[in-house]
Amino acid sequence: MNQKPSNAFVAASWATLLTGITAYLIGLWNADMLLNEKGYYFAILMFGLFSAISLQKSVRDQLEGIPVTNIYYGLSWFSTLLAIVLLTVGLWNADLLLSEKGFYGMSFLLSLFAAIAVQKNTRDSLGREMPAKQDAELYY
Image (tube, helix red, strand yellow):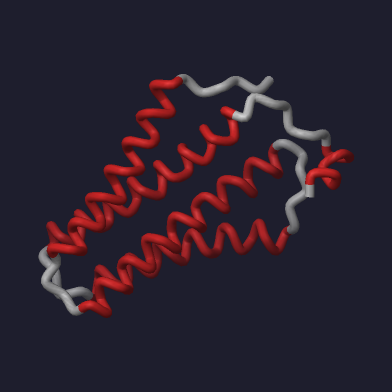
């Protein structure tokens, strides 16, 4: 049972991802902080996006019976949580208004959620059944 996502959901997911990333980056561009601070927050966004997509893929692979090593599965969870913790610690210690901290936190979480939705839609749009567990090695 592999149901393709609707075009409206795909469009909404992409729009949400682009909105979250764009808002975060515009906030960084306009922020009154040193360039190394801006680099830190940019790196956290990129790390968070990659780790969230990796986590979604490894969880989905496990649910579909595709082999995923425990170390990769654990690292996917760890890196996603680490990105959130690093952003939280950075914002906690930043000399920013509370509203700015909230803006970065919300646009970051929006971007992570949307990246997961886009990755899910991309995978579901392939429209093919995933291989059985014993045949999965042939695809890797």
